[in-house]
Image (cartoon, rainbow, N blue to C red; front, top):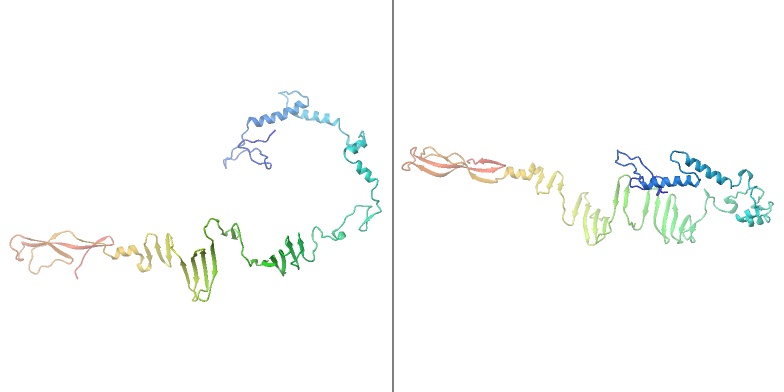
Length: 370
């Protein structure tokens, strides 16, 4: 016989290694347990073996054969068993029975049993005896008080109210009201009180050190760095508070509070960021700068305030020239035209001109005259 072991069986349903069946769950996509021939063959042979062992031929149309077979097998076994209501009186050979169950020596020793007149710690043997820890000078299983130091596997050299483990000066000791001292080789390496755990030596952890409850802050090491790093808090008269990150080759960065209360953050190398902010100023990773000095982005301010290009505008031709003729502001002469002699006293003398233009903020602007 075996339990269901198809791929869709519910693993360990009745305990470790005890698979079971499941109806599946369409909501989660879990399939119902598939049945295979191995499983049904095992069930069939187990049932048929019981029926045939009782001497009952298998009959396809009968559905009570298993029940009948179990009853017949039980009846056959009962015929060879002792009756409970005889309480052993129907044992054919009682001395042989005692020998077979190993009680011959017990019976012999009972003949030399301790008389009931004897006592244990003043308690007569005529009834059941219940000894307390006080009767034999021991601590009770629950409660009780141990006076003096305790040593486990060794003598206690710490003294007072202390427990040492394996080493006579390594363990725990009460160092005051609500204070549990931690000792190693008779040195106080830390203590626990109602404010927490206090250590006076390094704390080494192969795993993570975590602080917090639901949300945790972790200090971890993957142990694959080429150097050791240190996060250190220190200070002096000129630098009251310094929070510094170092490795074996020197410092990486620090945050420092100055005597006047100001704070300086310094990095011993490059700073890489998508965006840097200083107050309301923003330094983008494309080189652009945003700030009140520019009224927004520097690129926009430059675009709106600097000339990006200069050109001559569309060509035009003047009317007739006279000696006091002037072009409009921002125009320059680019050529001359005459139908006769150049005397600037008639409509036949003309000039070609173009306006000077410059590009500011995406708009071409014609220059004006001073």
